[in-house]
Length: 157
Image 1 (cartoon, one colour):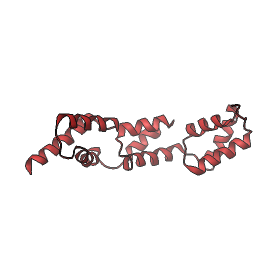
Image 2 (image 1 turned 30 degrees about the horizontal axis):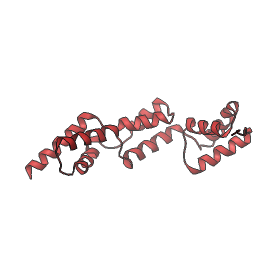
Image 3 (image 1 turned 135 degrees about the horizontal axis):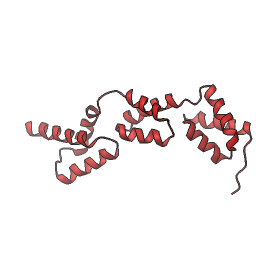
Image 4 (image 1 turned 135 degrees about the vertical axis):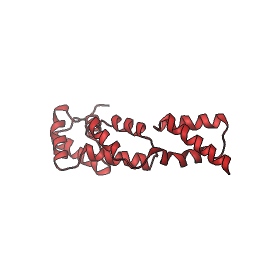
């Protein structure tokens, strides 16, 4: 399949169409424009245009995405960091976004672990829960602490 090369204006229109559906980081937008047939030398013009009008702002994008990943997907800070890095967000914006996340991770993690274990404290279930939450970006020590709290609470009842 031969890809049609986009002119500057076509690339700008394509960028605006992409941004109409959802927010993108600069890197994501640039990658999609290249795939669509935009020339690399036209990218600075298009990216400057969308940044000038506030359609692309990596700092705000990082903050919103970090909050969404924490609140909706229930990811831990390590996983959120990876997701933002994958989208081409600069390190200082990632650190800023992570620092603005509310709440202690263990406060959010405790009910999730409790629901995942469902009162089953067999070693196989505990190992499965640890892998599950480690993949989602939580610290091993926090996961273990939550499991211990749940065990203690269960033995008190």
